[in-house]
Image 1 (cartoon, rainbow, N blue to C red):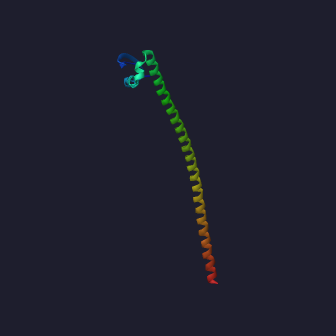
Image 2 (cartoon, helix red, strand yellow):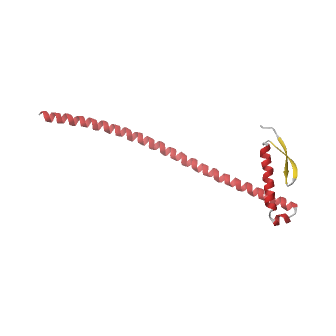
Image 3 (tube, helix red, strand yellow):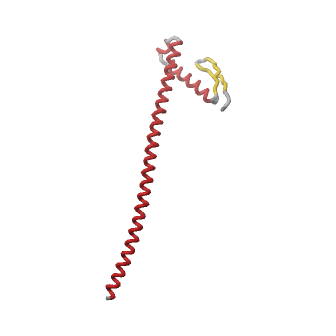
Length: 133
């Protein structure tokens, strides 16, 4: 387990101490995400008119919305990966079956070539006998 990280970050113009087992870079990215979300909301005139409690709730709702949209996207990607894995499995199975059929067909071809060769030898023998009579 990695060691605990304590860093100072600025969120909404105030300095906070963030602690966690993630890297400083990761914790800074979290603070940056919150600041960006706050800036995005502050561009909306109706948001600025809300009292601080309502602003906090709207910020939290927006962050939860981002989270669930990202989670939904991940779920869709995981389903897509599962479907592609199944298709890959089916294709591999089909490839193996085709390779087996090809090997069997090649064996049959070799057998038929051998049979043709034997028949040609018999034809030559018969023609030779017929020629000598």
